[in-house]
Picture: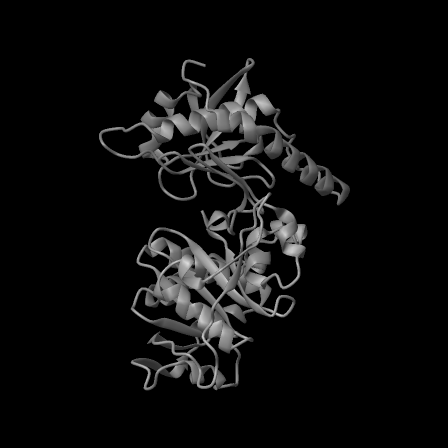
Length: 382
């Protein structure tokens, strides 16, 4: 290689290979014949190396945004193949980046005569193929697809400069794990990796969209058929929605056959973007557990007679994480404190908080700990 070695790439390569080896073996035991072979550590390290140094370059002042997938040309549906493959180097990657910066387009990487080469572009990623994405300068995400063209990727590791975070897939089996976190991890039901639209999780899509608008936001998920949550809200609510907006609920209730259509997927994406956009307004957006929108811009207040929340348990679903107990303001500002207080007063509610700096926290009541549990999940949303 003509560029310096990136130490974090060598550190994480064995862990990434072990992850994919384990899940590939499990998939084959379930009868899947289309599982790609797991690349060796040297291949994984080389791709992460190239992506990292490319992320620090500039092409006509633009920051390169690329996604590299380890896929053989004949394993990709409808591949766009270059007559002359490109070298896997930062220079070559930065040059081609403008052509593949839009979401859903990946550069295919495979060995050609012993050398790793970029052979072309692909849109559909085979299940359990390794993908390395440049999320920002010096920030990389190693992930794999659940299968098909639609659906959320499953993050395996996040590398930021010299910091490496490997996702702990066992976190989904911990007590009091919120369904949102379980769905983000994607390990609770490997069969769901291949069902794409049928297994779509609306809260995951909302979380991704909330984080993407960059303004910060707060989304409260409350029980259906109960107004108890209003005891923790200043009234009148500036932007109450009457009757409740039900398009999201209606789309989620469509039969599986409908959810496989592109029309349904496009409609769902538009509604998710619209609802997530409301969270940019100061205050909280309120959604029922059946996805009915009932308010936005709502101000949270401590419920009458309830004590002030003083501490929360904080965890992140990464290997080596140690739970910490801290005051909610140590996680962020007013949004975090308000969200923690709301869940402290409304045990059957969940609060999703997006920070302007990209951090994302899910607040839920933990019966095991008898306190609010803050789950830091931005590592899963990149």
